[in-house]
Image 1: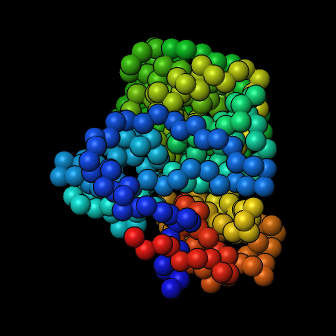
Image 2: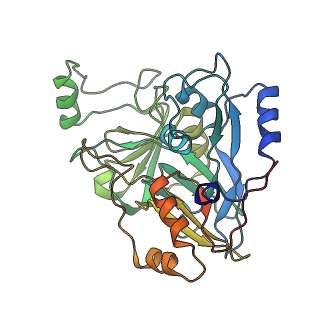
Image 3: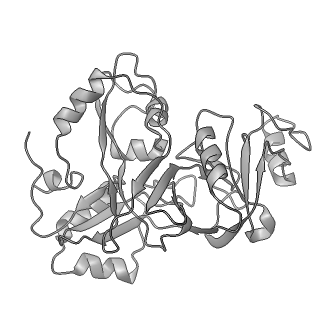
Length: 323
């Protein structure tokens, strides 16, 4: 009963979606624009479904086709082989989500879910980007902050810091003092500088085919090449940027449905298992969990499962429709 209730909220026509996925070739996707829900709602998007073909490639390749993050796809499909998913596997593509509990303006970046939300000024929409963030380590973590965009630069050069050069040298790689612009530049073709911390943190592209939706950078925020190009062309200098770290998002929707979306918390040590790390609960989350209309058993299941997708934890939530 509980496991059936843990399914993503309001999933309908799943079988039809699977048939469509097998009938048409999937082209690489760009960042998704979603209409903003009403002020009393946070729910956007709908999940998709993908049937792995015989030559379906790696999970990273599938994540890239749908433009979702690698870890988000892995969390939504526990047990799937991350290297070569088995042909015939039906994968859930996590494109349904709750908006973060933050002002709907500028850029909001949630480290725990490895996603960026861009609210264009004057538009009733939000664009969602999967991102890569800083690795484990004292000087490679991406910090939380409230800041602004101070500069934008196309075809940037890369000047590795002394710490970055030392880390690469320890791996037998000697970096030049300055890496010129071009296809071999790890920053890609566009860079957006954040004002805080002396301007050392950037939102930039990449010359790699992996790492989006993972902790791979030296502290900067990494986007796929097409995504950073679109963001670069649309976001103005001076835009507010909020970087938060919230593994749990909740919403009480206008119809009374109580939704929770739980992500794995960020590891603090290489030995941590993010699927088992305790998740600190704010007072607001505790009040949501202890509310009379919340099924606490289902919420505990959601907090243990950590699928990264919205789950209906209402006491009288309907069971998923049978197709």
